[in-house]
Length: 102
Image (cartoon, rainbow, N blue to C red; front, side):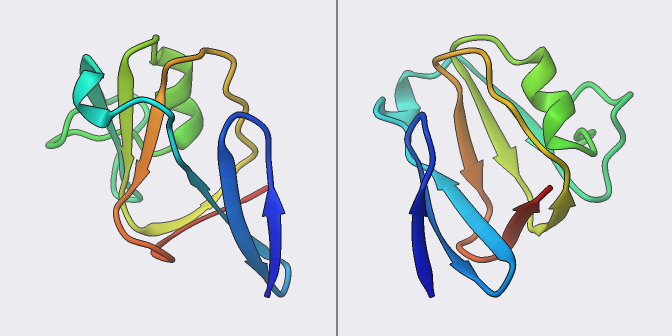
């Protein structure tokens, strides 16, 4: 298993060709203002709530502003993501249960 680190507090491990990044925010989750949800059963036209989550991480990031927590449900997300807003926390449902690969 190879370790890697990415910018903006992203850290993780790589096995084979799949990277499993984990975001470790420097600020306590309790200080964030609102929550957006992403699930493989969601839809990007949803409002991103727990009962009506987004389908893609990119959609959640595109509507998130500073102070948002994005909860990602288990699944394989095949998308390249770019975070351009500071102050966003990304939380995965379980270690190894969320895979993000471009």
